[in-house]
Length: 230
Image (cartoon, rainbow, N blue to C red; front, top):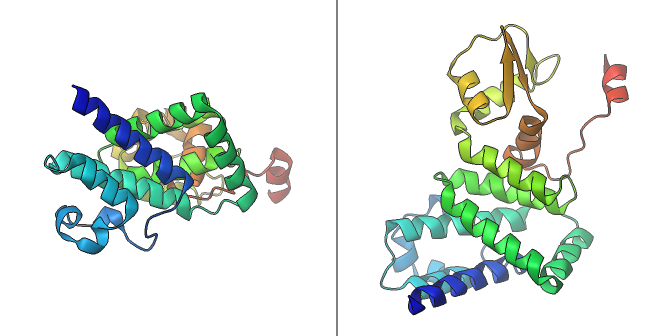
């Protein structure tokens, strides 16, 4: 048990360091790496975060651990690739370094969330949502709420969301049939339907723009602006 605790604390340190320092190659698509790359590819193993993870789990790097490492690296890469301005990044780093309660909560949730999602693509969505949270688009509770939607999201609906976002009245259809896409959206908690009317909820729109599209600077149009457009 003692060694497990040490390993867990070391993984937490990897996450802490990875959030405040982009000490990994942002040109590598970690989601596409073969599982054995973490053990056999010297270039990959020398990336500080990867080296730490491999060192911690050496001798026990099974498929589940490697898959978690890929999700974690994908999250960190996507987070550091987000278009946050320097002032916002420095503000986050200052708070992260100085407020232990906040730091511990962030690290714990990032580990838990990346452990719970199955698809690596969802780690990208989680990272985009986290960057958007830092950018002031929603508070911590809102971030966690959106992450729960990500867990339940069937990724096959993304093309449908792209389509419905282009409607004359975006994210609304008055002639929708109850098909798999609708069922998946409702089960993720980001859509509601009455009769043949379908509407993507505010949660769903936040998830779409900030998480799926990764537009951390997106500004929703004001109601007056929408009226003027019509």
